[in-house]
Amino acid sequence: MYQDNDLKYLLALNYVSGIGAESAKQLISHFGSAKSVWELSTKEKLSIQNLSPKKIEGIGNTELLERAEKEIELCEQKNIKILSFYSEDFPYLLKQCSDSPCFIFHRGEMDWKDKKFIGIVGTRNMTPRGEEFIQKFVADLADQPVVIVSGLALGVDAAAHRAALENNLPTLGVLAHSVHEIYPRANEATAMKMLKNGGLISSFSSFHRPQREFFLSRNRVIAGLSDATIIVESAVKGGAMSTATHANNYNRDVFAVPGRVDDTYSKGCHHLIKSHKAFLLTEAKDVLNYLNLTPQKKQKPIQRELFINFSPEEKEIVEVLRKNNQLHIDEIALNLKKPGFALMSDLLNLEMKGIIRPLSGKNYELIS
Image 1: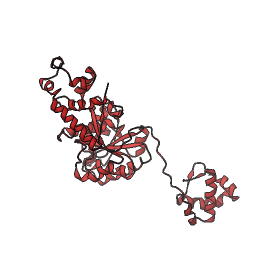
Image 2: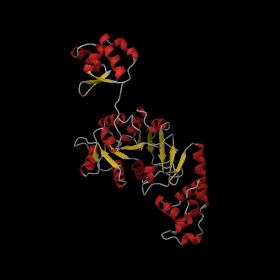
Image 3: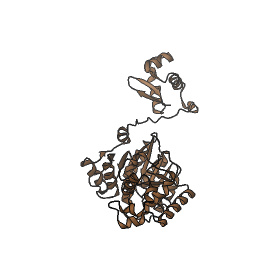
Image 4: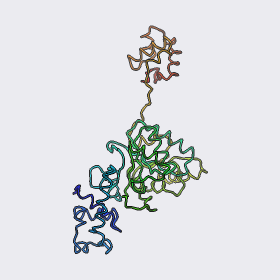
């Protein structure tokens, strides 16, 4: 069973060359805790099948344990949380993935409960059309309990994070390096804003030096965190396509935005759709339906001071609807002691001003 003092041993295991997350979890499952694994005798280590001499030498290494202790101390100083796979606060969806990391570092403020996580990824060479889609798509999610997840890269990733911030939605940037640094520098201002509502996460400690394969690990985490993954623009080969592959392997929903047939950065999306590896995405409602979320009607508040712009007849209609929520045109006419046809012009004016909306069956309601 996980204990708080197991964290340094879990980190130290991660520093052992050749022991990945999957091997570490298997060892912990067999011996009961990371501490128990770390304190194995040489005889016990030699009895484990497929454990190379290099791994045997690394487990229990004092220098690696000291490195783990320094990492914990550094994170405490910088208010960075270390979420262990074995703790209750580890992201639920990510925990369901067989190749999930043993821990993640989280820098920022994030409420993980009762949220749907939507990953948005794509090319660094984003087109104006791609950016326009992201802005509209995320704006249409503004009233939903969702978190926007991406990789804080240039292009589509950065646009997704910015759109989330503009619409007051939490957003998480999954990094291919430690959360102690921000790269690329061009996204530093965006990243700092994200810390207030979401933040940065990574499966890499400050002692890990950036490597090419870390980007593939980053893509796995994005897919593993997300209920649904959106591919906005991508060539046939690229990081976004690997994220889609991981999401499909995790049995998560994948959506792709179509483009013109000759667009290089739509060919990846078209390939996913044609091969039935992604649903075609044209609007936010497509994703909301799959996530069992209901699109919210955006309503304009009525400000009393705006009544000075109403005619006396329009103000009478507004007051009647305010008392009754919604009414049939005949009921409005009855309340005002006027024939229904005499109200048509005023009702149309109020509709054009965004004060009321027509409903089916000649009913009207206030937009409040």
